[in-house]
Amino acid sequence: MNNVLLIFINIIVSFTIVVLIEKIFKKEGLYVWAAIALIMANILECQTVGLFNGFTSTCGNVLFASVFLATDIMSEKYGSEYSKKAIKLAVLAMISFTIIMQIGLLFTPDASDFAHDSMVTLFSLNLRITISSLVMFYISNNLDIFLFDKLKKKLPKQLWLRNNVATIISNVLENYFFIFFAFVGIYDVPTMLNIATTISVVEIVIAIFDTPFLYISKKLN
Image (cartoon, rainbow, N blue to C red):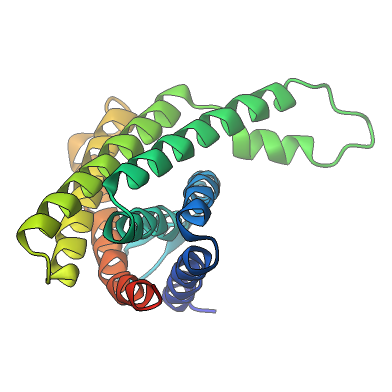
């Protein structure tokens, strides 16, 4: 199946899950989703796919975007203080997952084991990239919450505007700073800019697509 089509299917499925979880479990459900989505996104970041005209993306982008949708829903319906708690929970969950996985990789596999080598490939820790990812996730999502809250006070009726402005600015800044901190000294500057720009274009498109789901969630209140 075409990768672009799969990206759109992933957007619809992931964002629909966010809306349904909030409808059924309210803000508590979004706390859980933020933690699960961050863990899944970091795993799927290992997989790079081609899209079109030389554009490449990672499979974790949609799940990272779903956390922005979750916190925007919380900020809109419950208040920004709950969104901030969700981000803290997600970061703590990711740190816990990383520590437990590193301990697991230290075990000596039995002769009958078939999973250890694959797990080492997926979960071996690159400390610099992991720290860069977590720090920028925390900063960018809190920036999104801050901007969304400020714009809500100034533009209470323009939900689509504050959602897109806050999410796009936060996403783009996260991409450029993460790529710089994670890969400076590994890639040259033009390569880093190319990677960050490509990812940003993909995430801007994804961010625009989350707006209808935010309206749907508000309607289901």
